[in-house]
Length: 190
Image 1: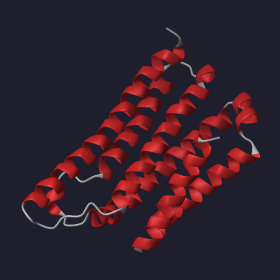
Image 2: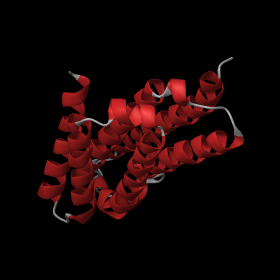
Image 3: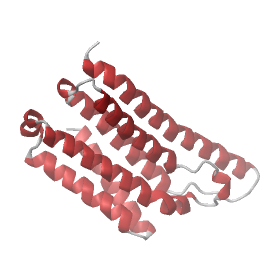
């Protein structure tokens, strides 16, 4: 087993659980919505929470792909394992916050979005900073991966996530989330 395989097992396990947590939250919310509709009681998933979930999924996938990109530079020591655990656990916590554990406390999940967005985006911003710190710490990777395109796309990502933290209106939040999702789709479709 290579050092990368040893470390990636933990990383992929926790990131996989993060994805499962998002899907579980969506399933729980859809189930609650259908039960409410059957009882003629108002409940709306809204648009903001599902858009946030989609963005977090795309962001999570980008870090999964990033791990593959840096595999030749991964060492299997206690610092790396601890770092991977903290990093991937932060993703799990961000994923856990996207959907409420008790959707019955809401009539519209857009309210939930405005409660958790700052924490979720702040955690994701910290992970971007950690990723770049790692890139800059390995000169070979820095020269290969730090390009005008990568720096520009990361700048757009950071600016949009910062905007998602700041904006307070529903329409502005939808616009920012759509732009964040579109940024990843452009990258993935290239």
